[in-house]
Length: 245
Image (cartoon, rainbow, N blue to C red):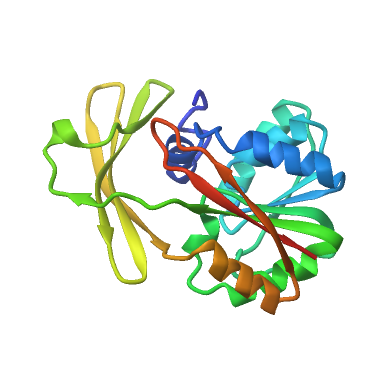
């Protein structure tokens, strides 16, 4: 991360730190985009981790996210590289687009962040061209932990910008009946050494590939054999559910 903190918001900085370095899924999205040979919609695009990679490969990409600041950062990065990526500010839980897409990708467990999925599936089905493909990434099982001493915690996600240093430390993974809560402590260290600390948490709904396939069928989509993305040293494995229009 090399951008100035004066250029982008804290929302952008932390998104880059916590999500921007993950690359294990990119070959699959590129494979699917090449096979579909048409425009791609990236849902929950953030600052463009997937959208920019697909645009570099020559695909026509539209990036959808509910956070305009993240999309503004994406658009600036696309311009800097001479890439075209269209952006749409909308919520994945329900959106309406005039354009139709050969491929709709939903990376990084975005689908598990939604409070309900019926609106998403209706929107995605409407956004797909005939024969188009919807690809949904869901996380593998996360090992729960809490109250660990610092030396046993997972490695933090880190980044630097304009002399600032950023570290996002996972401190707990708590299992509940319907979701897993991931808790982090974010530390921003200024050039003068002063430190700002804040807590952050997300909840990932417990959902299986079979459940998503059933919900997709209810929306008029047909399941195809799922794909998988292998675990890395820092990330659990991922299942990618495929549904055909």
